[in-house]
Image (tube, rainbow, N blue to C red; front, side, top):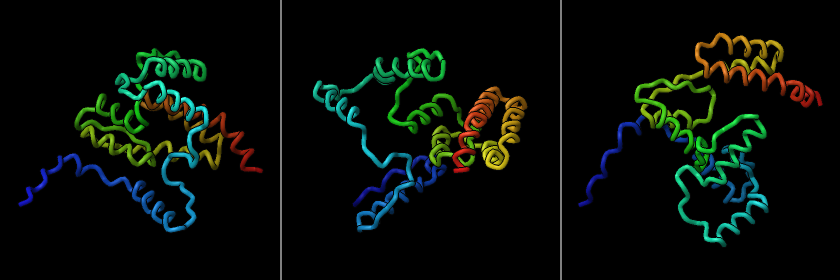
Length: 203
């Protein structure tokens, strides 16, 4: 007699299926049947790694670098990431504060488990990456949609100067310093990008 499988934890009830991967499977099945498919569902390019990356991987394998790495990432990579932020963003980041993960999902999961307590509320932009809510659910916290960014982006498409002002106003009116910094950054980025966007749309 087959024994019944053990019951899953209750947190699984709060995690909905990741429909994007279901869409990918359907697209791959159509492609295998001979249909021509343009993949626009998941965040990965439709080309492979560059020759320099492939060469570096082959060299690493030839040198026997196929064992476990330190949990936080190898020191040269963490130092290179810190140097990148200093060079491109003028931010001084201690390499000891850099953690390398296998993709953003792993990083966000670790961040939620390290910083979020059961019952906490986590602000999530809406719309956002579908899995973000699952990272929050894994930490037994609840999500709170943050719609302001969407409204401001739509406003930006209609009136650039009005939206930039709205971003700046929201940055100073927000009660949370973290939100203030994000909104100021959005305002700066959009004020810089708008002329290029408008010029491209006029072509």
